[in-house]
Amino acid sequence: MSDKRDLPRSEDESRSRELRDSVIGLGGAVVLTVIAFVLAIFQPWGRSALLLGLGGLALLQIGWHFRYFLHIDLDSSHRDDLQLVLFTGLIVLLMVAGTIWILFNQFMRMG
Amino acid sequence: MSSDKKLHPGINIQHTDPKAHLEAEPIMFGFWIFLMSDLVLFTLLLATYGAMSVHGIAGGPTPGQITDLTSAGIETALLLASSFTFALASIALKYDDNQRALKRWLIVTELLGAAFIGMEIKDFVTLAGKGQVPQVSGFLSAHYALLGTHMLHVASAIVWMVMIWPQMKVPRLKKLVRLRIMRLALFWHMLDVVWVAIVTFVFLFGAST
Image 1 (tube, rainbow over the protein chains, first blue to last red):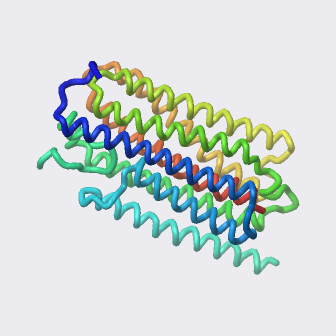
Image 2: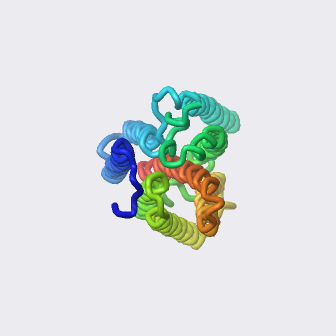
Image 3: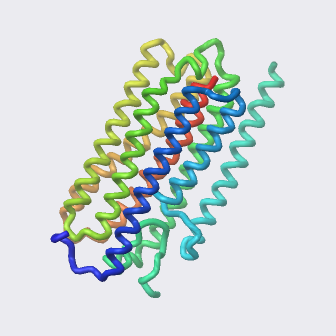
């Protein structure tokens, strides 16, 4: 700590809070990843339930990364960024669903 | 405008560097817009992969036959660890006046990223060695395109980090370099988010067929 400049007390608190956030982010991501790999290796459920579970875990982990590594939250000064992320989420949903719909439809027409 | 509040998501440097903090808001928001458009690119590659992994086999290997979970697990661990070390680098960037801790964590992040790329190249070489090249089927084309695009992103982030290195030695550039490292941090964390989706929909789904 000797190389640190004199910071107000609140500064030290926010440092430890940001450090804690990163550790929580890492811990949660590790837990979710391990659960997903264990599910994929031991395959305890039928195929469709398994895929659904894995997809849900991925969404959860992506949300976790956004919260703890990219620091997107409900703080009012972040509203612009949150809206940007949510709007992108909507666009992504439309494009992914549309792509899969059209490609599968094409396949049925060819089959 | 008060510089005392948070102006953008993530590590804000309002107390330790108020001047750079005020300049950060539009720059960081602009970078978020780039990140989100990059995310759209990746999700479209993923959607193509999703369709191709079902109907694009064309007599070639199925996802289940080319999935190597051990390799995917090691790659996931490397990238997640590097995301954490970059978070530590961001904290050092904000609070530590000398750059020792920042440089240390950036080097660790670079090495982890390089190891990740090494693992992916090994995977590609193994796959191609079995004759499973992109030309074989629509599925393999989508596989190489998706993973290759992600790998190129990680590689360019490493080049970016290496180019930051000499800039850190110039005191005049200090403010600029801080803002650049903050954007690089967002880019790096976003690549880890994309990898979560890839590892689930490519490797874990592949192992479940």
